[in-house]
Length: 239
Length: 239
Image (cartoon, rainbow over all chains, first blue to last red; front, side, top):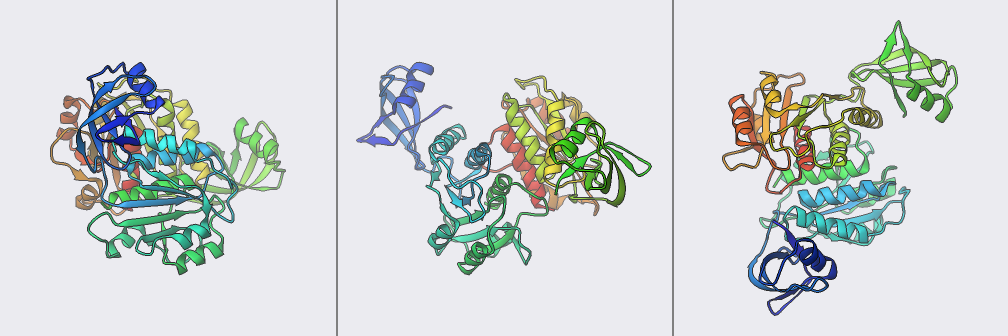
């Protein structure tokens, strides 16, 4: 099943952008009248009939809508510091999308070596990962902010966790989710993952003072992107 | 902490191979008398004093041995069909080593598109991943065998699972581990992950007849290498 993406949907008509149109018409050789499947990136799958097989702007009429297509039963925000090597961040973004992610929030820590991150490549990556793994929703990729800004803006009602390497009592992701009074419908979960050099004590203290629970990801020493994927998987396992 | 690897250890003397010697002496500029940390790849960390800083064959004397260094409390064999794209298999091998893996067994399914796999690159990858994540043990990388050969040779006493996409009742990895009567010390766990085209019904039936429990990895549609890493993480979470 091949999915296309469109953000240009109105009056039961879907327009594909030049990339998607080219892929649909030139690569897959779809012709007018063919049925194609289009996601709106917000959770809905549309079964469509191709109206105009224009390789630059293909249009299709919506015949059926399926909401919550490939959805998971939680809303997960992963706030992850950029890795020195951008590839490693990108594979985290791709894999986390496959497993189940709603918001990717790059955050810059006081000890982050990489302090800039281009998000356009990440947006393309999560879009194709969502299509490939048959999900109607494409994760939102935020613009980078500082760790402290992110902490201060984090939603009150979310279950918030911070993975860091300082000593001190920590819970597991499972314990935190089991102990939290989660709403029945898609609870908000937010996990903060630090840079190679870890969070600064100030960042960790601020997070804890704002309700982030310190969690451990077990005894293995994990790279930033592996820790982020393990945490994503731990949440996925609980739902 | 920088770890070196040596498989040439005798009479309290460690010899580093040319790669490790060059890295130790040329790159890190260690000199005779420096303390270096060497793993034997079988779980033991040795604190050593560099005796001869030869950039082709450095030798060191063992001063202290720490067994079970960075060890996890289970023995996991992941039997995974090669992915079309070799990179994806390699990152699974690297990430699984960081998280906790003991044996990587490439298996060729009846529906595998890729039917050959070079293991020398994988061996180098898991070695550096083990060093990087501070583990004394390096996962064993087996030579590829057919899925059926692997099933028939799988140890009787291991907790065995198969992830496949056919319909029918399935348990979660957690359920299987909770219900199994696991020995206290490092239980043997074995998980079979199929190719993009899934297992053949014959392969699945043979596995089940040999005690492999069908498991689900949840509702998301995962690529082969993502499924393998999710399963690896699910086991890691339970110990």
